[in-house]
Amino acid sequence: MQSTAAVSVSASATASRGGARSEAARRPGGVRVCGLRGEALACPSLRISQSPARLAVARAAATNGAVAGSGGGFDYDLVIIGAGVGGHGAALHAVEEGLKTAIIEGDVVGGTCVNRGCVPSKALLAVSGRMRELHDEHHMKSMGLQVSSPGYDRQGVADHANNLALKIRSNLTNSMKALGVDILTGVGTIVGKQKVRYGKAGSQDKEITARNIIIATGSVPFVPKGIEIDGKTVFTSDHALKLESVPDWIAIVGSGYIGLEFSDVYTALGSEVTFIEALDQLMPGFDPEIAKLAQRVLINPRKIDYHTGVFASKITPAKDGKPVLIELIDAKTKEHKETLEVDAALIATGRAPFTKGLGLENINVVTQRGFVPVDERMRVMDADGNVVPNLYCIGDANGKLMLAHAASAQGISVVEQISGKDHILNHLSIPAACFTHPEISMVGLTEPQAREKADKEGFEVNVVKTSFKANTKALAENEGDGIAKLIYRPDTGEILGVHILGLHAADLIHEASNAIALGTRVQDIKYAVHAHPTLSEVLDELFKAAKVNSGVSHSVNEPVAA
Image (tube, rainbow, N blue to C red; front, side, top):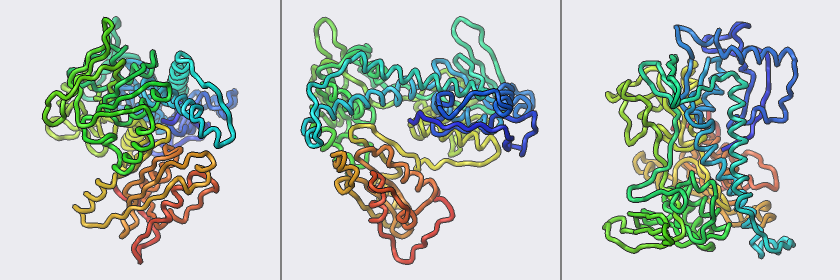
């Protein structure tokens, strides 16, 4: 997730749902915060002064839309249950739209991403990247560098991750407070149409009303049956991010994003890793060609072995001097295969929605495997298949795409709708990334998905690839391992998917994701100019390599629909 932000302050009025607002109703709509919008108060471009413009913004923030937004007897225009990345993004956009907004948080601001997910994990991965480079004697010598006996302080590494989470959490909290969002502490429960009760143990619950409600309660680690968690020797990513120990031998159950990133951390810090994967190949969620190359680059050269096609039917924590015991069974026959003895086990089998206790039964909503059912506009659907008026669900709780930035995008989309502007988010344009060394990123369809779609709809699919070995910047860094892959339609030039493995792949993918979001075709984007020498030229060469059929138009007026 992104944690930087740019802030500009303006005293001018902005448009609300009903048009231009009066002077008395002006909100801090001129405060625009980019990306995650998490560091408004940390941004060096924001200068504190007692200027008339700043006082106007402060007065507007203090009213929190009391004049402009609220009406009809509601306490708020919008109440958001959950202050993770999705809830935060929705809250700030709601302020920009002039809505009186409150956010309810039962734990700490920032949710999983900031406190137990993408933020602290990136701090650990930053350390693993540097350790990996310092230990690569051949790499260092090829650049004329000499490093002797690199090491690390485990507690110092853990503190780095924790301090980063604390900083981003503080920035998110301060940004909402500065813009006048009411932060209400407690567990939120929907008690009826447009009514929410919140409170915490030992205090009296309070009830508020809202014109619109957004559920943004996120997710928790999923732990399969038969696995006993002690938080010390058998643990989830929540515990692993504290880095209380670096085991000599750790088994990682699951080889998706979470498992891969932690394998990068642990092997860089000296651990041996064993993957346990239920499916027949590692990294089953990735494009198969990318997964195959990733195994060659990220798995085979490192102290990693793996078992595929097996379930960990039972895992017992270490105790009384005995190691962690992992019983493996065949994923198809369920027959016992073997028992592993390791020092620790990380359970990275995905995440489950955190939706219990929301009071959904009070409004005739039934979850599906814990997920809140929604339509393409994130509107909650009841048990009869009808839209529940004024109720939305975003992020991991709805299961559409369990990524922090997807939750934020969904929240912004919902605010657009309740502000009177219809908006449907194209989920195929939302990128994903795995922050290993080197990184993996993707957007859109994998090649098998694209070909399946083509078979059903009757069109042709083409694939082109470029290598990092031909990129000047990558070679200057001695980081030539990697490819970029484009999947597209030659009859229209529509970009169906882009997959990258290589140096800074997570940063490079956004040109492709924005092209998909805006409906830009390969015959147009191939004329874009990229600075030389930069890694962005990997994509430049990729788009130039794509060939569309003769006679295909070179102008696109409408974005491609999801």
